[in-house]
Structure formats: structure tokens, C-alpha cells
Image (tube, rainbow, N blue to C red; front, side, top):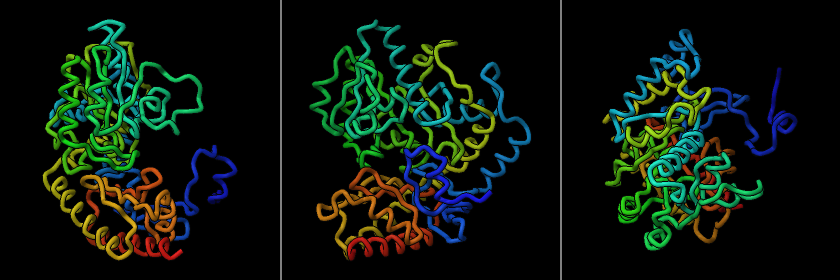
Length: 401
């Protein structure tokens, strides 16, 4: 059966507007479409393909587990889930893990746990959740309400209550909002969809201290920033702050759908049997692939390489900007970077994305004003340079159009 981009319009719900080409094969940081054209992938499936495409360790784990056991139910546990949970707890602050299928599901679990924890320890009045404007935490009704972008949450009827928002990096405003009614604060330790916004260290430390003062749980959404993306295994490790709950997904499975919520034993105890669950969460296939990805990423060589590659990206993007004067700044950390457009190109991030695709480069946007890059953590220097050469041609096209 032959399918084309036109097939999408005939059979798919129109909530996406995909590119005109259809990728069919990938290897490392290169992708080929139906016509055999080769693309450099600096999008990484939105910070998912942490080891690129078809990494041998992931393929081997998938094949091995695929011939053993795909799915059980949570009436049983399984070896890959237990191994992965052990590695996650050994490598982080956490003592307990809950597995889901996505970042949104991990965040949903974190929010429900925070509410249950506060209810059982402090009573019904302690139910308020504080989150941050321009944040993004998923597309379930609860998580999209907590995410601070009305464009994603409006238009679906009454929203879950007791959710308030504050500007990111505004500690004074946050201090006015938080109270003893606050049960949890949810934040990205590096805002992704909102424009690749890094936190001020004093802001993060102040949020942690105020959470402690008011007995509120601090939830770090590390769906996009985790699993080596910033050069640390998790971004909190570079911020001198430890959350109470951490969510992780995207890069965790290297492309296979999986999410996880990490927390302490004391907090986890409030999700007793029957209080929350997931049919597919923690299935053997997903956990086996995620374990293989985790083993590759959680090494000094890969994590140090992320820092080196960030420096190269920043240097090449600065060289492009010196020539074409389109960016105000290069934001982000590690291999989650954003080129923020200046006022002359305000609102035109998608133009740069489309032009990049035409130059056989895959990149992303983060809102209307930021071009985003989230490639494989093990992308080669040669592929970075080739990708940036293609991006420069795309920039030249937009500037001259």
C-alpha cells in the first residue's frame, strides 16, 4: 500500500501539520525520506532520540526482549522494569519509581501524588498547585491546565481548579503566591516549549526554600531536560537543588515510549495499591530499551561530550548570526538550545523551520520566536558542522525572501 503526505489529510485528525516529506529510515543523526533524500536530524524527535536513530544497543535490546516477553499486566512485575528502576534510584535522589508511557502521564501521576500526599498529611485545604507561565507539562486536561500556556488549555470547558501561575524567574511574585495552602510547585528546571528559558540559580534555590517553609512538594518536570540533555544526567544536578518528585520521559526510552515518576519512599507511600495505575506502564519491552539507553547515556564520556558539543553549536550559531543578524541570543544548556529571533524576525520561527526542511535539515521551534535544537547526544562533530551549514543556507533564504 503506497502512502503519501496527501494520505495524512485523508485519514488523520488535523491536529498536526507535518512536513511534506515522510521519513522512512534513520541511522545516527541522519534520516532518509521516501525519495531517498538525506536529512541531518537536529530535532531528535523533540529531544527523544537521545542516541540518534537505530542505535545498535537499543536495537539489540529491542530484539532480545521482543523474543522473550512484551507485556504482562501490573498484576505481575518484570525483570527489565526492576533493573531500570534500580538504576534510576541508584543514580538520583529518588528511592521509588512509577512507570508510565509518556511525559504527560508521568506528570499526571506526580500531580495526583502531590495532592494525595497533602490531603493525607495536612488535610483538604492544602490543595493548591503553583506552576509557571510558558511552562509545558503535557496534554492531559490536568497537565495542560498546570502548563502555563492558555493556547493549549483554553477551549475545552471548565478546567481543574486550585491551579495558579507565576512568571518564571520572578521569585518576588512567587513568594507572594505561595502559602500554607500550596500542596505542590511544578516547574521545568529549563523551560522547553516556552522558549528554552534557563532558570536563575537564585530563583531555583528560592523556590526550594519557600516550598520547604510552606510544606509544599517541589516537582521538577525533567521530561525534556533529563537523561543527559544538559550535560548532567538530570538538570537538577547542576542547580544545587533537589526536588521531591521528578518526572522523566522523552530521552529515557531513546525513542521507545516510556515515562517515569521518581520520588522518595516517604512520599511514594501515599500511592497505595489501587490509587493510580497504567495498563502499559513499566512493560518489559519499553523498560528493556530504556535500560539500554540509560546505560549508554549515564557515562562520563557521553555527558562530557554534551558540554563539548554545546560549545561547538554555540560557536557555529554565533558565526551565522554575525553574518545575518537574525538572533537576539542563543539560549539553553547542553544539547537543548534555542536561537531566539530578534525584533526584525519576530514571530517567524516557523519560516526558519520550513526553510531548514527544504535544505534537508530537521530542527524545531519553541514558540513563535525561537528555533530549537535537541539532537542526539552522540551526534558527531562532522554532523553538527554539516547541519549548521544547511541551517545557514536556510537562514540566508529567509533573510533574502
